[in-house]
Length: 305
Image (cartoon, rainbow, N blue to C red; front, side, top):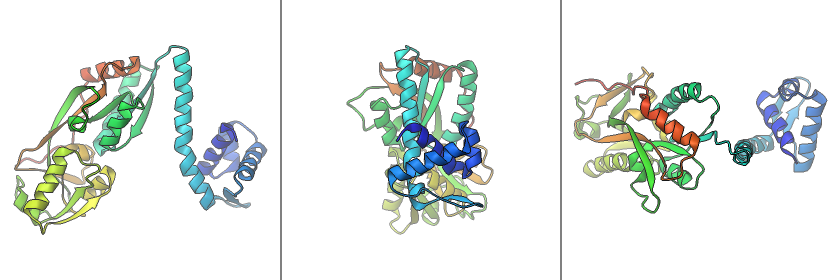
């Protein structure tokens, strides 16, 4: 089984059209069919249902697609990296980020502008929870990580370079259609009377974890539900399922369907760019230096008292 057959399979799994995949891969439709048949014979199972009108993935095909897509992406990165190392060309940059709506928005804007100044740099993105990002950085899978300084509070055996970029204050995030009954600025007693959305502790950093723990400790009867990850956390708030205590990083700055209300107690966090001390590639150094000179996109505004 070679990577060309896998690439053909992945393309067909996305297009569900033999002629379109043949065009995308610059081969004949017959070659696509032969590759898929060969792959199915190798695996001992059908990957596609196909007739004259429709092509669709079998259950085995869906599983194979979900398993092979990240593997082939990682393989492609490894090939590029090996070639660049061999040629002493250091133009690959892998940026780790936690996937908050702000991260997604800001990185898209920053990378677009960065590549106008450094068009030779090939940028890859890795999305994990904060703790996993720190481990990926330690192991060299990421060159830099866009994260909060809190993420490194549990790491002592490895030294990091951390460049502060922006500071934000925790607030209360609600949908514009959510009937929030508390006053502004919001105090904990107000929150005790609301439906709350908490972020799973595995995704929490110390400040948010402390806030959530304080609410449940002081108000044992508080009504709350857990979001499995930062994306679900943001979407549950946006859907009006409750109020969440979060920093503006949890909200897309362009989202007019979400309100950020000031919190009476002052809890802050910061965003920065981190790298392994003494292990920055040329591309990473250029990106950090460039980032320091450019302002981050504005965060979602917090309503005034």
